[in-house]
Length: 202
Image (cartoon, rainbow, N blue to C red; front, side, top):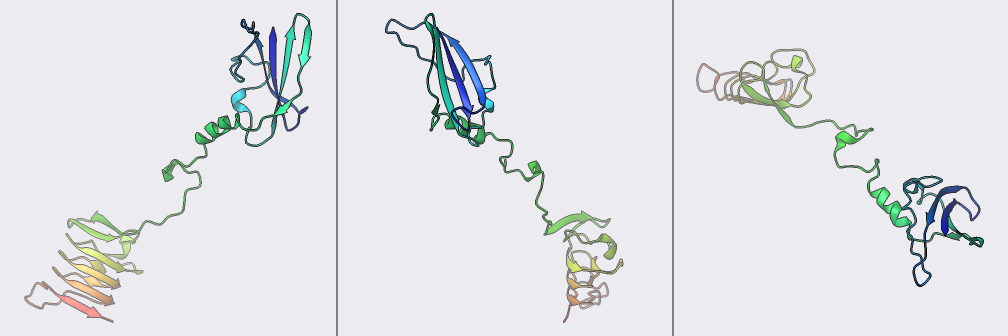
């Protein structure tokens, strides 16, 4: 006895997208138990490639035996094969992995914060994205939060352990702190080396 399963797409008589044949002998009770989609050499299509989630599908069963062939009416799949669609969806190539490096159209993000840099005096920190051509060499253990739009080697936190914030500020003295617009921190408050200078300007 040969049992043939045909899966039609869209309608009961639509295109056959999958077809498989099974040769079986019934058991002592005249029963046969089969699983659709288990034929490794189907005559039409590939069970795993059926677009379950996109189209309606109908199953038609034919039984051929020594006395002839019986064709049963096609009936629509209502639920069971859609578990197969869910399985495929779970491993779909377009599912986001969580790693932005996997994306084709990556978000246009602009990095922010501070970056550690060493321009010859030891490591200091400057705002990410600032053009180094607009600043002097950063001082060791210095923090530069300033902005400079002019090409200069004077601006920024260039002194040892200095701090600069604002626009076009110069913190060149050791331990100097400068905030504001066009400010300089190099004059001496406590000794001739310009140490511990603090300058503010609004």
